[in-house]
Structures are given as structure tokens and as C-alpha cells.
Image (cartoon, rainbow, N blue to C red; front, side, top):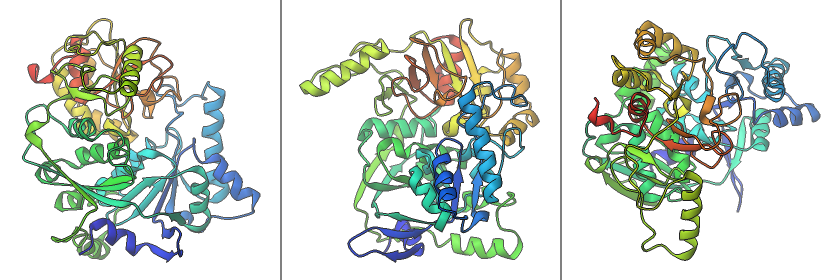
Length: 464
């Protein structure tokens, strides 16, 4: 019996090249301003048009400032990239949600919330965190710029079929433990290369119990385990989330779609190339202590010691410790922090803002902490205000910025200064990722909120 990955993949095969890659049909291409300019330039150079323009959606997110978006972008490089995307979308007749457009936001937040990402689809974007859309029951993965051009021209891509892995997480999660903690825990166990060469299906009671937003967070971080992508079989929760969304099917087409989506699951006797099992009870609120997302631990634990490490591993580990200003064996609970970032395609959804607000309600932001709270889209921003979360946050001393990738990566104005500690809900803690010399501690919105009001790394379970 085929796995769900096999079912979706096989349904999109145009042709199998002998001793070579598969030509795969792509249902949806997302384009942002950073990885698309060369692809569009190549199309123009060859005098090509897009084969299926209606299947392509463009929006700027990486370079957009998170304040004064109604004014011209000050940074000349960012301005050029954003303007170039708008021009290319106009030249090729593509859907474009530009800055200040009510449908603008981070592309991996907008796709699901608008019903553009649907079960059974193949979805690509020139961005590694395209795996996010796998939460809808889609095969979604990041591609390179030359591949973006390939999809623009032919709505197809040449790909080697990855191996399949299933990660089962049984039981249930404890108080204060979120989908972000699940992802950081998995990476701490299998490392940032543990899923290399695989497409991961997440299963088990913990995954089933996650909200759609939680599933989006989990799938978002698949790439950080080295996986080609990660996804979750669609269920009633998926269908309820999608029903009535702008680009989702309606009427008879909806009924027909749901009937098909219900078939999208791995068979009872499906064989995976690799299976891993974990227990949700073992997962605690997590933080990272190093310079890759796999260097994670429970917030109450101590950084590992050098014991048992080989010489090369020790050198790499100490390089990371020196960058972060930490020591092997150090306990980080109570460590002072400087910045808090809530947002990114990992944790910039309404559920994340609800979680953050639930912790800070009736309290005050710690003096000396700079907090950037950045919705993943204008739709999220609108919902924050509809639910009165903006008032809760303002009363606690926080302000909400405008949508964009913000401090996830140093491509806009929101950069963490040299040597400063940032508790970030984003997906990467590489050296310089949030700004040259910045020190990033990845965490959930609950851990970020607890740090924001105490000024130090705090177990959120002592507050909620």
C-alpha cells in the first residue's frame, strides 16, 4: 500500500526520465522578491510567457519594513527588490499582493489563511520554509531560482523522488508545551541532518491534537531537520479550517474536493523507508543554546558538556559556545535577554498572538527589553484588533508592528545588535541570522512572552 506521499507524488508525475529525475506537475507557485528576479529575467531573455499564470501568486515579505509601509522603502536594495517583483508580476500578468495590500503578508502565512494551499497539491516557492504548507496535506518544498524559472515557464519541475519517513508522536503534550517545542525537541533528538533525503509525514495523537496553526509551525521546521519537506494527512480539522476561505472550493466543488481529500492518507500497511517514534510526555518547553536549531534543550536543563564528544565535535561545539557567550554545562534559566521577537512564518499567526497575550495580560514588559511583535499578515493584524489583543498587549507595554518577515533574518530594518540576546519565535539561530553578531535563542511564543515580562529566560509554566 502506498504512503500518502506516494499518492500525491504519483498523481503529479508527467513523465519519468529514464535513469533521471521525475517531471512533476506543480499546482501552486509562490514568488517573493528575493529569489524570483533572476528567474523572471531569464524568462524575458528567452521571450517566454508563464504557462499557467493563474496558479502563481507573488508578494514581497523578506525586505518589507514593519513600520511606515505606506511610505517609500528607505533601503535602496530592499526597494529595488520589492519594486522589481511588482513590475515582473505586472509584466507576466500574475497575482500580486503588494505592500499595504489587504492580502499581503509572509507568503507562508498568506497561502493557508487564504485557502490557496489545499490538500493533495504540489506547492513550491524559492524559499526553504515552503514546507509550512504541508500542514494542509500538500507536498510542499522549497526550490532554487533556476527551478522557479522552470515552473514559471512550464508549471513543471524536474525532481528526484525523496525517500519517505514517518515520525509518530504518541500521547499528549503537557501544560505550556506547544508545536514549536515539539519541533525543537525532534531536532534536538535527530539533529539538523537526521531527516536529510526524506519527506516526512507527521502522525500520532499529538499531531492529530494540534490546531491547524500548530501543524503549520511543525511543518515549517521540517527543513531544519534536513528534510525535503514535511506534511500531515488532512482530516476534519483541516476541512473545517479551509471551509469558507477565499480561494477554497465552494458549493458542489467543495463536496467533491472533500470527498477526494478524505482519501489522502497512508494505508494501514504502508511501508516507509524510515519510521521514528516519540512520546509527547517527554517534551518540555524548549530553548536553543547554540547556533543551529538542533542545539536545543528543555528550558530547565543545562547545556551539554563536552563529555563523550570527539575532537572535531568539541571544536565545533566550542565555536558555537564562544559565539553565544555560553559555557558547556551552563544552566540558562534566569539568563538576561535583550530582545524578544514574536513573528515569522513559524509563529506569526493569530494563535501565537493569543498565546503571547495570555502570558503578558495584566503584567508589564520588563525594562530594558525591546520587543518586536510582528503579525504574519494583514489578516492576522485585523484579527488581533478584532479580538482586542492589541489592547491587552498595549496595556502591557507592547506595540504591534506591520506584517513582514521582520527579525527572522537580517534583510530589513529589524536587526538584533551585536552581542545582544534575542528570544525569537523564528526558525533559525545561525550566526548573524538576525543581524551581524546577534545571539538568537529559539523558543515558543509562551517562552518569548515569559522572557519579555521578566527580562530573563523563564519557564512559562511558572507564570501561566
